[in-house]
Image: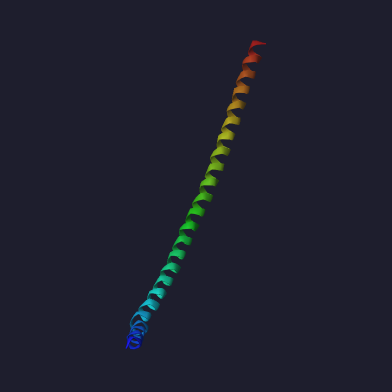
Length: 87
């Protein structure tokens, strides 16, 4: 009789639980693909933003360097003009 109960339980698992488990596996797989796709899109956006920020940083540093050079040139020109007046 215990063999009969075991067979009945086994059949119940195969008939009732196994399809549900397969369906859950398919749903999980679909969700994993969707998550991977979304994370990939977010990664792409962050990479793009990082590139833009790096470009902006280089542009700002270049502008600061140019401004510094122009200020030094103006200072040297002013000093030279003052020295010329005193000589």
